[in-house]
Length: 392
Image 1: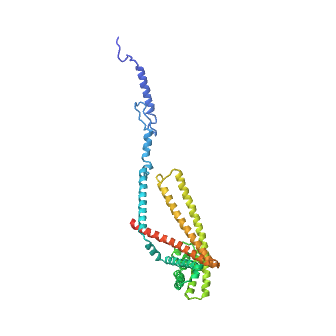
Image 2: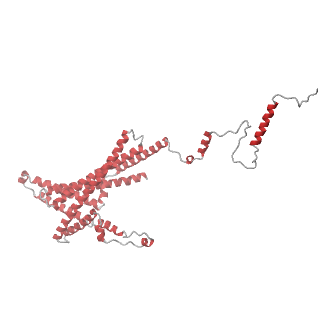
């Protein structure tokens, strides 16, 4: 009996045929659908592939998304080393400025400061005022000494009487010289009042209006709207000039006396207004001082030092020093204004008791304080000039 090879059944052959048949049917259903010609928008993976395509890792996606982020092109922040270097550079600059300032102060002589003071009219007026009231105080003590019983019994020699007479004439000459120096001082407040006249009435900003010359305001309108201190300075300057012309002999004595009384009233009112302004400014500076001191105290309690927060601490320290210096000169100005108030009150209200000694002492004190302010101002100007020359 013959048997062909084809009719011999192999093991698992049926299973193989069934698997192939199922695979071919899967392929036919999956990869060759009836709508093959219609394009699909989704990607389908081959399930028969032993190594399916790997998806990118989440870390790689997140890293690649940051490559083109905007932070990639931003400038890096300063490192601690750079901040320390900047702080050291600021320290070096500050040390150089302080060194230049100290060298400039050591080079300035008192004669140079007085030379700059006497170049100005105000400086010469203060210098003559110092000499005038110094001589007044000397004559006051001299007369009080000579009025004692021991010196009165001895009598006064002729040369001493002549010296006292010359000193009294010198005091009167200094007074007239000072009045001549401050003549036409009313031009300064008048200029500031006239500066308000150039403001146009309308706020039209059209080209035709802007090219045309603004219409000045009436002088009476400017006078009525001027600040009180400026207006009092103007009236005081006019009255002082009239009194000076009377002392020079150009006007009569009655006109000079009336002008002198009016000038004293203007001086009294301007001194009171200046005192009010001074007190307001002192209150503002005092409040600012407390704020800076509070910040410094808070930083010190929080552990902040010049090394941990150099910029803030240096700024606050410098500001506190400036405020302390400003408060000192405001106190000097207030004392000078109080001396002026006492001096002019004797003339305005015609007080007689102890008039000569009180006016002599208050006048000398006011002259010394105002001269000290002027000396400090010119000294600082010279220091700045010389320090700028060193820095160049």
